[in-house]
Image 1: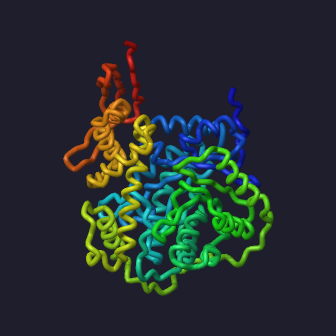
Image 2: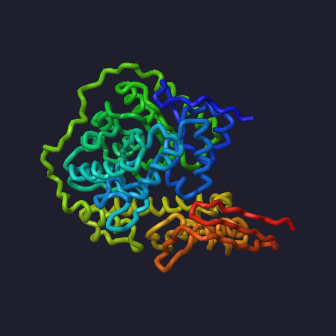
Amino acid sequence: MLVPAPRSSLSGIGAVGVGFRPELAADLLSAPGAVDFVEVVAEACFASPAARREASAIARIWPVVPHGVKLSLGSASGIDMDRARRLGALCRELAAPVVSEHVAFVRGGGREIGHLTALPYTLEAARAVAKNVAAARRALPDIPLLLENAACTLRFPGGALGEGDFYAEVVARTGCDLLLDVGNVYANAVNAGVDPGELLGSYPLERVAMIHIAGGVVEHGFYFDTHAHPVPAPVFDLLAQVVARSGPLPILLERDGDFPPFAALAAEIATARAIARSAPSRPGLPGSRATSLQNSPDASPFEASALAEVQARVAELLTSPVDPPPEAVAPFDAGDVARSRAILQRKRVDDALPLLPRLSSHREAAARLGARCVEASPRAPSFTAVADALRIAAAAVDDARLAPEAIVDRLLLRARFVGPSGDGSVRPRLLPFIRRERLPGGRVVWAIKGIGSSAEVRLIEPRR
């Protein structure tokens, strides 16, 4: 019988957590004392009623931190308030101690980019974040909202502020503390050719309330923060530098793919916990950097009236079905644009496969098929992951090895969504649904759903 671990406070000395993923569930539930809290991706709970029920269940064991990735707090055009309200409802449902989102944008000019895109380091971008945070807070419960620094794959030329000064401006204008991703700091420093410790020191470390650590890999001379590799020693070194200056803080290990035996992750958790517990309880901090820079001159070419246009241009460059020629991407670097487009293609597959749990048991074959499907298909304007999952399932039905699993996955998605329509988009299914599919070999399965987009879908497999 599973005995829940005592619910711990995120402010406890040496509190270390992990992102809760299906691949880790069995190990975590068998040893709940291995971590002090867990993090769930908010959008996964929005997309899957089963994931939401699981999050509610594990909230009885650990404190659960909802982590948003699609609110687009950096969009000059504002945020989708319906998303903010859903995030607030999830926080209340989970009795979340804190909630976090990214200082980034994921949509521009009416286009969904599909992944976190870093902002230009300008005062106008900081103002946009502050405006959007103020709007989001109206829909969120009265708990801390932590803002995470983003990794840069596409750099804006001519930013008026340094990276650390930009985040100092953000926390000053929003009143929010930072969720400092030291893996992203390391990635940005390596890719910019600067010293990681020096870049870290430019951040407002006195405003850090939580830390993320994750692994990455160098590909073609560029360091990618993949969340699918072990945490490298330099990232642990940066972690030690932060807690030496800021004191013990909650630390969360992110691992989203290529999961090793749990013992390897447990060793990383133990390393992070030892670093946290070695921190001084009352560190000496330099004077606060979180003072507003609003009176500083803004030499950026991206004026207030142009930020939305710039973001729309970036969204177009990154999501266009056809690779833009190098001469068409100015003032951005052509290599940065090509790299960012490749990352987005990979991200589409990563987002779609969790919606195909049976097909994903054929991990390598499903990933290869997914890559071919998204490469040949333009990005859907809404519910992109669902639209891509339906495309992948349809292609897999034609493969005898994958067909049984793909048919069931597709049936379950069709029970919850309508489409795709002419532009490739899908929408939640509000009406009841009942349908059967015949599997290879003659076995029949049924899917039944009641009224409402969040109604439970029942899969019935009659015995022959």
